[in-house]
Image (cartoon, rainbow, N blue to C red; front, top):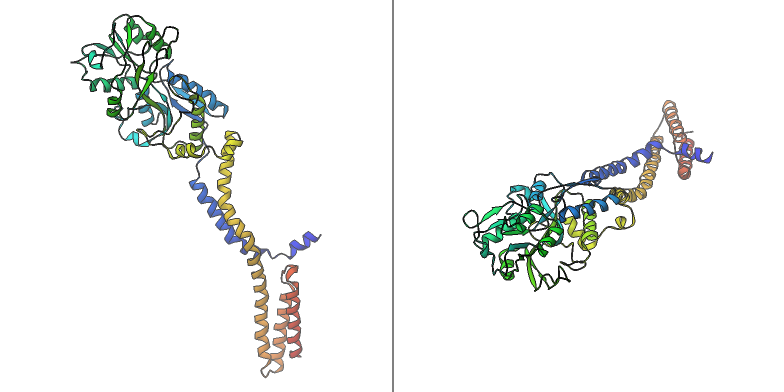
Length: 436
C-alpha cells in the first residue's frame, strides 16, 4: 500500500520532462556507438593455401582444426602457390592466404595490393635448387642453356626462380628453357634426365619430394656462396645456414655446410578482416609455427616483420599487448559478445552516471517551480488587497484565492515537499484573513 501511495504522489509529467533530455542523450550515444561498432566476427573464413600435399596445404589443415575449436569454419582453397594466393586476395576471392616474400612486384595485381595487410611472417621458405651433375657449380650462371623446371604458373617458386636467374644472366628463351613443372612430375622429370635443374619450394611441392631428391644419386643441391650479394639485391630474401647432416644424420646430408636462399612466408589478409579474427589467426599461427625446427628457433615465428605488406594495426596491437582479458578468460564467441556489450555500455554509462545524479535535482526543481508559481499568484493577489476595494472586487479576489488554494491541494507533490505545500497554505490563510 505504501508503494502504491508513493506512486500516486509522483508527478509523472515532471518526471518524464526531467528524464527526457538524458534519455535522448543516451539514445544518441548508443546510436553513434552502434554506427561505428564492428559487427560480430563472421564464423566462416576462406584461406587460399597451395597444391595438394604442399606445406601450405598442411599448415592450412592445422589452422582449420584449431579454428574449429573456436567455432570458426575455415574453407581451404587449393591453389598453384603464393602468386595464385596473392591474386585471389587482391580479387577478394579469399580472406587470408599464405604468400611468399618477393611477389608484390611480380604478381602484377595492380591496385588490389593496396587493400592487403600482413598478420605476420610465419616461417622461412627455403629455395632448394637441384641440378644434375657430379660436382658443385659456383653460380647459377652455370645453368645457362639448360632445361630448368621453375614450378607451375601461379606459384611463388616460379616468380622467385625467374628473378634470381635473371640476376645471373639466365633468361628464356635465349639462355635457357623454362619447364612449368612442380611437385611429383618435376621430381620424376629430374630423376629421368628430362630436365637439368629444378627450383623447389614448399608452396608448390611436398616435403617428401625434397627428401627424394636429396637422396637421389647424381642429383646435387646448389650451395649459395654469394649470400650477402643476394640479400642486398633482393630485400625480401634471407639466408639459412645448415650444417653437415642437417637433413640426414645417418647419411650425412649435406656432407658440407650449406647456404640456402629463404624468403619468409607471410599470412596476408584483406584490410577489412575483423579484429577478433585477426587475433584468433595470429594465436593459431603461434600454435602451428611457434615451435622450433630445423629452419627456425622456438618462438621466432610468427613475427611482425615489415616487408612488402604493411603490418595491420590489429596485428601490431596483438604482438605488443596480446589478447584482451575477455578473450583470455572466455570462449571466442562469448568473448566477442562481451566485448561488443562493453563497447555499448561505456558511452551509456557516461550518460547514465551523471543522469542519475542530475535527474533528482531537475525533478525537485520542477516541483519547487510549481509551488513558487502559486506563490507568485498569491503575492500578486495580496498586492491588490492594499488598494481600495468595493464588495464586488473583494468577492472576486476571495474566489480567486479559493481557486489558488484548491489548485495547491490538488497538486501532485511527493511527500518530501509536503512541508512547503503546508507553508504555502498557511500563507494563503494569511491573505484570506486580510480579505475578511
